[in-house]
Length: 332
Image 1 (cartoon, rainbow, N blue to C red):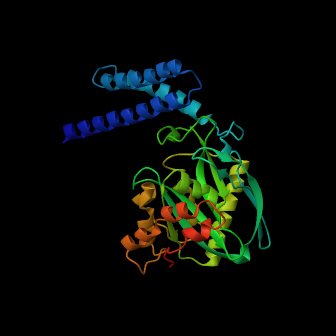
Image 2 (cartoon, one colour; image 1 turned 180 degrees about the vertical axis):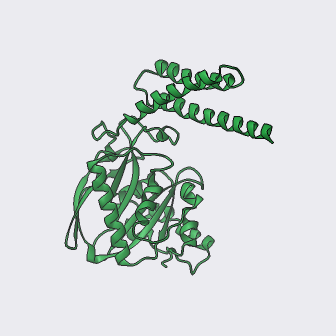
Image 3 (tube, rainbow, N blue to C red; image 1 turned 45 degrees about the vertical axis):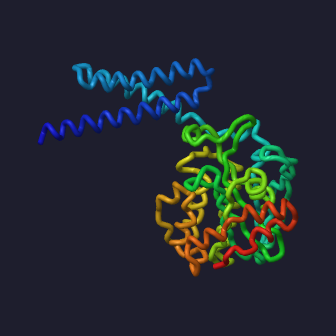
């Protein structure tokens, strides 16, 4: 029994060393502000150190090797803690501004609403607007899922509909720099910051359905105007906070789905954790199980009617875009 326990302890130590060495190696590779050869040498050096320590576990030098590793890891952690998200940079045009909002009575005024006229998947005529919304006219919430990498992963957009105004769509995105891009692995290591975009649906949804050719699905949400208002104001509060204090984007913990789920938890009593929040392509089935979609239909039929890309391309990025894409979509 003692021998088994020792083997289990050794296995746990080796696994821990491998995990920590891998994390530190990738952190150095992605975030050191040096040219590629220097980053490669320093990151590779930490990887070699980790492997050397594992080998040393089977020798009398094990304690000295572990002490050296701990010192090196502490140095990396201290450097890591000094990395802060920038508020100013040469941002890509579509994420150049962070929307902010102010509420006065029932009037919500949003500054820097994006209303780009996209001419290709990557090129657009930029237009930023200030818009006012009467919160007493808020009708409901819609969920858009834009599938860009198979059925497992999608980009989540939440849109709010009004009786007297066009919908306003909110998208939590990577705030890329000019020439930069989204990388699920790199964005685990403080590679990009977070931005919340409020935009016209023809912009943030139309560019995905009509120009990028993504499979966009629309689900009407079962909720009350009061809860819809609370969620909208959560978006405004989060956007204002980001404008004051930037945050890092993280592919696992701070992304388009997890940020929205954290907002929803502030207004709904019970939102249990679920693997479908991580593999967010399956989020509609999670929402269906929670009873917030059109549950009078089987899920397969609901998903079949949720596809809007064909209708979107038929109507084009015109003033009737938002009405056309909702045609035939089941309502709870």
